[in-house]
Amino acid sequence: MTAKTDKDISILIGRKEYLEVGYDLDGNQRMGSWEIKEILDLSLQPARETEERFMAEMPEGTKRADVEVRVTMFPSPKEEIIVHRVIKRIHFGVEE
Amino acid sequence: MLLLLTLLLLIMPATAWAEYKTIDEIAEVYSVEKCSACHGRIHEEWFASAHAHSVVKSIGILRDFIEWRLKRGKHFDRSQLMRCMACHAPHLENASESLVQEVMQLVLTATEGKDEAKREKAKRSLDKLNINCIICHNTVAILEKDQKGKPKEGVYYGSSGRSSPAHGTEKSTAFRSYLFCGQCHRVFTPPDGEIIFCSSLYESYQDAYRRWGGAETCQDCHMKKGQRGHRMPGSHDMDLLKEGVDLAVEASGVKLQPGKWVPTAFVDIRLFNKAGHRTPDG
Image (cartoon, rainbow over the protein chains, first blue to last red):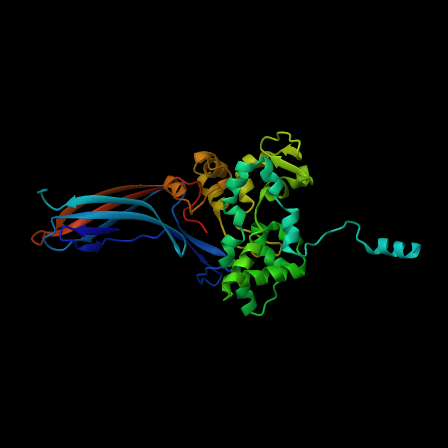
């Protein structure tokens, strides 16, 4: 999630990852399915809503910014699919 | 001559069991060219699916598994190969040990060989091993083998059981059940009991989605909706991903810290996972 100010400055607001972490019985994270015996489920759950809130300071004097939120799926480390991209304009103070 | 014949009969096992010695032999037995003659559209959909390339599309992790064993001086025989191939290419259950070694070498050549022509040739060979019509509509078509018996040779099972002049048909309710897909898209337990955590879609579907009242099946979303048919798209398909996850964003700007008035952005994001299982999985 990023914001671009009216002075063209880009700010990283935040990033959240949803995934499963697989690990072996010694507690070491593993990538190979034959080594994984337990998981930490940090994924989005079915038929459930997940809410995230972020807060980020902008540079002094910023009057407005365009906040961009992207949801990206990585089916593999080399493949990136942008599923959703939403841009919201915010103002600080009265809109000129 | 009579004595020799008697000796041969005594040596042969009571039930003949054929071992496949080459990939081409398997490809011949499991050929779906005849299926495409009548089921052209379905064949085309299937060919665009991950099932049609079930070995090649997972070749990276297959190579990693083989290398992991070889580097540790562990043997690699059919039982090891079937840890992966029980789902990716179940027909290899009847592969000879020499074919197992050949498949292992082909995976290594296809991923590590310096010669591009050899790599592509190895991939083309491995691509003959896949989850095709015969695997789904015969080999794994019956979920209640203990109650209903094994699939009959030459009979193709489907959800309608409509008769065909080309081959035997029978109706199987398995095709409407999420358990049909769950045969493979789940945590796998090989005969020695050491689980392979390749996918846990079925567990997530059964224990979370169904528990919270979800009623759609795998087939509903991955085949019926959007006329996806036998293409059965998954996490590489944009339409399915967009359909599976909803995004709502609210954003506002406030100037915080009285006196300093620092412009601060507040962003509230809601993601709704509409899929019947955790996202992502695997």
